[in-house]
Amino acid sequence: MAPQVTVDSINPKVIECQYAVRGEIVILAQKLQQEIQAKPEAYPFQEILYCNIGNPQSLGQKSITFFREVLALCDHPAILAKSETQALFSADSIERARKILDQIPGRATGAYSHSQGIKGLRDTIAAAIEARDGFPADPNDIFMTDGASPAVHMMMQLLIRSEKDGILCPIPQYPLYSASIALHGGTLVPYYLDEATGWGLEVSELKKQLQEAKSNGITVRALVVINPGNPTGQVLAEENQKALVEFCKEEGLVLLADEVYQENVYVPEKKFHSFKKVARSMGYGEKDIYLVSFQSVSKGYYGECGKRGGYMEVTGFGADVREHIYKLASVNLCSNITGQILASLVMSPPKVGDKSYEPYIAERDGILSSLARRAKTLEDAFNKLEGITCNKAEGAMYLFPRINLPKKAIKAAEEVKTAPDLFYCRRLLNETGIVFVPGSGFGQVPGTWHFRCTILPQEEKIPAIVTRLTDFHKRFMDEFRD
Image (cartoon, rainbow, N blue to C red; front, top):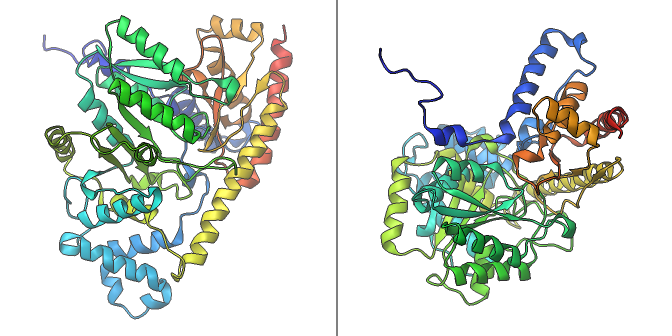
């Protein structure tokens, strides 16, 4: 008999890999959505409210006009020659599109590019990093990717040789990290963020976990830091970042800096500082520390998830290792050109004096101030609910409230072989149409339960979410009260 392809015969690393953000709850939500369309009267709600994933435009966020004008002109350059284009598009978007097209070989957005990305676009990004940080950036250090996720996979592929290689990861973490470590056959070495201090990151905790991993025969290769935090929303203080840089330098670890939420900071007392800026300000140069910084067009105020644009800036590696990173990039030929153009626009938006500057600023600030208001409204609502505590959302796009579930609810979850936070989220979805992701998908201190909620539904929908959640939570707590 010919060999069969079964779950027992596929790659066990694929089976081990989990991605909660699009996991069981979301699959159930999509099924419910189809049922509501077919039979609207069957449920007490008429729409599913997706609070599970950082996908802003799917929830009604508008794209930035300047970015989309430039993309349209680059993708269909023939309209640049038409007289009516001057009336339809702003002068600076026409000028930027011409400049970008001149940088693309053959002016063809449908052609492959250099495997690291179009050189002129990398020049623009490097200049923007230099302007942001005040320290030099080299376009040859930039590898453009389809969003930040492939860049993370590329680094895991590079660093992980076997299950004896470990990656220090925050808990709670964005499941991309646990999934990519599992797929590439490594070991996740957890370090716990301290919920009591607003999801603080202590170097003493890193040292403890590093020593424990070493005693188990694990060689730790890298430290992942997500700043601003996902799913936890904290923004690191510069002094904290300096301590992390020092730790990586002392231990010879690669610092993998996930900085995709760098534009999403909502509290005046906090400011985003890139790890590259922090390392250089400490006097550490190119040869002193291994540092890979990730950026994406999917987050910030732009939220262009579907365009799949992003990059990593790779510093500190020798030329011989760099050759192998380039080889990994070239296996994928190149990232998509639309995403490459967007990444250059995100890092180099209109400047003071440009025709599009004022409308651009109005759009950007409108989105960011609304996100800050939504974060505060949801944070306050969670903190009013019995048994729920929620830290402040300083940045990013999420809240990660802790829920103290009654013993009866935990027992009911165990009886149906379900994690208690998944049990809560499943009930919430079935009764209200609200989609949260259980904390167990991100990792949490054992014996604690959480869920992640995005702040992305449009502002006018937030009161409905708060009302539905409040009513459900009261019913749930009354049903399972000890």
